[in-house]
Length: 80
Image 1 (cartoon, rainbow, N blue to C red):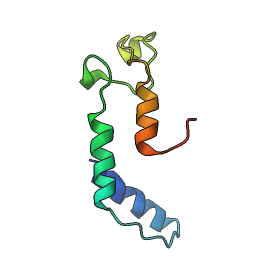
Image 2: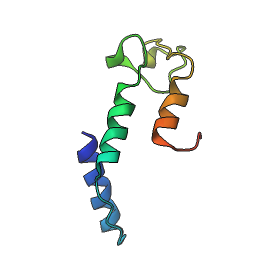
Image 3: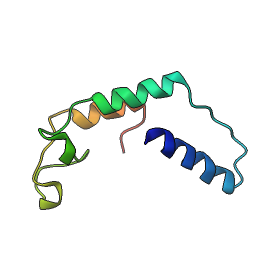
């Protein structure tokens, strides 16, 4: 799924005139695996990355403390 998303984003950028040609590398694959393996809610199939546990839309699940921070560190992005 990550590879398909990568390709779709590249195709979309090309339709907008972007001349970039990023390549899928083993490093990207490792980042995807690390991101996916990081633990989340008690029941992963119902995990929501930003759940605060107060909404029926999130099945009232709450992620462990620091969960989102670990995901941000893995992706090496800024917190929004």
